[in-house]
Image 1 (cartoon, rainbow, N blue to C red):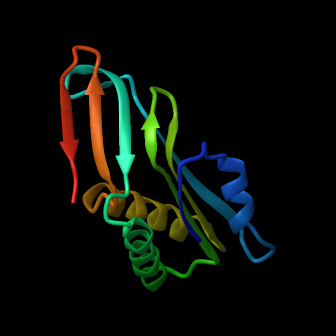
Image 2: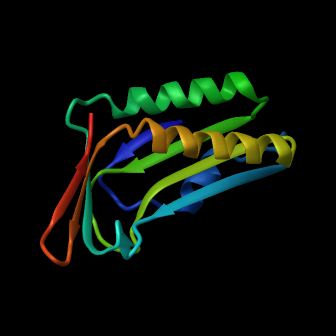
Length: 135
């Protein structure tokens, strides 16, 4: 399950989407907007799916992950829009029979997300400066 949403993300809802009787656990990552970045205080971070391909990019990551490990289910939920410090921007939930595969798969998804950021990102700082990263 892959989702791009402008709404706040509930980690519990995402976990409930992947857990099942065949799973020994659900490994979860909750990404937050932190108060500082690049040695500056953050006012906000904005994620934008400018080309409409963020979901397909996340689907690719999920597919690669499922090919590398035996998983029962995988969910990646990424929030777009303007987020403030403390907001959740990403939830990854991996259901697997055993924790070793689940932890490895979760780490892989997070690393791929950071490497291949599926959305444009704009950080605005309290000093008024802006930093952008995007497709």
